[in-house]
Length: 315
Image (cartoon, rainbow, N blue to C red; front, side):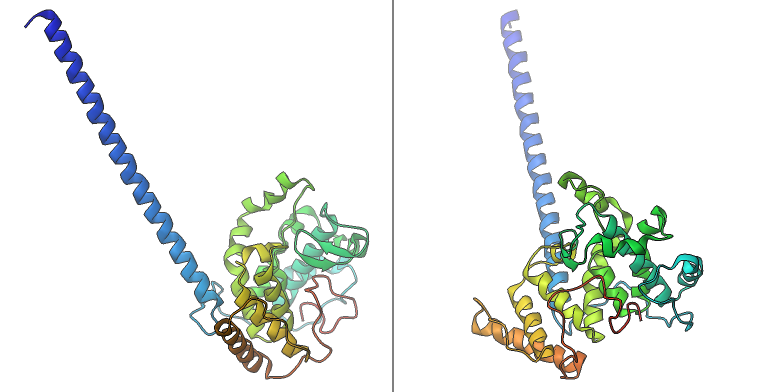
């Protein structure tokens, strides 16, 4: 074989090897992509199944919370609406010792202080875009910041979660609604709390917590859930996938609790309406004894209670 022939043969072998290597890598990448797609599909199916079970009343819906426990103390709390001030350390010690009402009080006031300092806070009553809740102006909330430092404000969610896990229904709703606030008014900074370890706990616990409060007979939970299934205005709303059947069911429940006219079913078909009506009637019967709420249910979920509200926050 001539030198020219040997050169051509070597070049041909190199080309064949390159083609073979390229084919192998393409097949390997296709296999990896297929495997990844299968994993994503399986994860999505598992998530969808979990959400379906979560949304089905009476289904297998075991929360991640430990069993409820009784408050560690029955001693009265300082009056609501007044700064904890010199009582702060004592209330915090009770909270750290397992007193659900004390943990709720610390978490609620720290959360209200966060809301007062949020860049979206207004000086007049309005709608808070961070939480999707109606709220008074920050001038009404600044008193809650007395004695509360940055460290304690950062633990608002943790204290509310502790109280909620212990069975305090007011804390359940405050925690489920999402006690996280952006540190800057600019949208790029708004998701900063997504990196907070407490946020992953909230993401997993929020919906079960709201449902637990509902089954405990708290009518505000119905308002929170009705809004969450209908839109994405706040953190909890964004956490819960929109579902017109669920939204109608909870709005129908609210009409029972308010002894008012039923809502419009919108575009729901007969089967979907029947499903929602059955769910609403079951909740109304089993969680509220088929009785309207005395005094009615507010038109929106209010995070900040009035000083003369009844029942008192965290009680």
